[in-house]
Length: 341
Image (tube, rainbow, N blue to C red; front, top):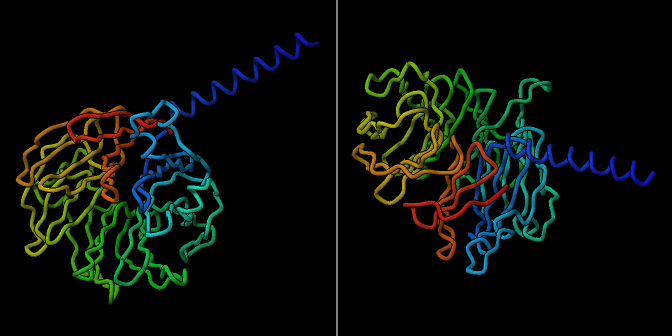
């Protein structure tokens, strides 16, 4: 009997180990956000899980392999966590059709009870579209979300009430950006359009169909816009079309970046642009259009990059993609180590 029990236990252990390896093998990291203090990193994956890492421990001179694993992992949503965003006190996460808020103070204590969960007012109760993008409009203290129902939903963060819907896209919304000073929201979608909205009136004031510009068009990749960010009078966007830099006053592209594959996230950083997408490298580009460097990463395809500007002691670039590993760069020129989801 003991021999039989040992055999059953061994088989069970092998099954568990196999499942664990399979989960790691098929894991993708889609989203990241740093805590307000800059000492912690949250990451979301395709299994609906959020992992919280201690950057201060991982970057310590006394760091061990254990320091590069999460201090906390929990299931936040049924579907993939495509978007994470941090406010002054909460981590916001987006899953299939819902947004949840988690107190950073409680997460650090390993308490995973959501502070609140909200669902936009969808047309049908049967409709559960994924939420692909979230950002905050500080002027109105509102949360701006976009996703699979083609609409932008705006929620008042104080009351938790969804107060307006911006309609105009004809397909999924992938990315959002807010120009606070100009009172504008920008959105990019599967329909190939970048729409500029006046957040006071809720009206679409401009529509840029990037794929119709010959210098940006790449019909072999499609017309969808997967990444979008703004700084002052400038916009970066890409996806099916080439990653391009636009002057928003003239509504025209000024630089086209010769990067292969679709770019999934791009950020302005000092006098450079950092971009990730299909392929294994973080691209460093100059504003004039030149690719200055391409730095190898662990995942074979990249979904997300994040710069920790909340802490001088833990100032890092983190990159995630088609792997359970999240690469950490203390120097932009090379990968220092990897966190393990």
